Image 1 (cartoon, rainbow, N blue to C red):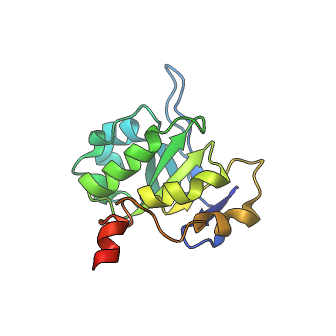
Image 2 (cartoon, rainbow, N blue to C red):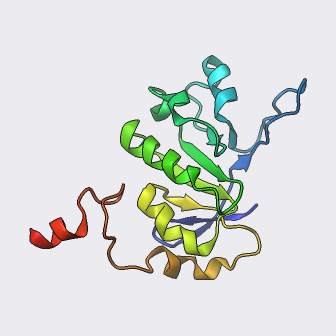
Length: 168
């Protein structure tokens, strides 16, 4: 199991399993003994079966729309957003929409091609846990989460830009 980094820089063992989308004609194989992250649209399709379970979360691919779970996000203990390539920034928008428009207050995790230099920007968009790409040094994560002392613009972590914060 990979390690997961929390927004405060601590590293913990990740017990969640990301379940891949099944191939055409196959059924979803959820492990019985571990918490699992399943594709968001499949969770929604089986909502009556998964409702109330704290061992089932969802994951979004970068092309998925968070509106899919409007009104249901509070039923989920964890939502992960996949970054298929580090140059694909749609996951940042998904995170902000989940936090700001849909009011998701649970754990929001970045997975996939997650690099150290992205961590602080992901944190500002609302992510609070991260699974780094396997070839990255997790011991550097805490420093990368707080590389800049202040952000200029408003984001999920602060609702006012720096010039307004300095004026007050």
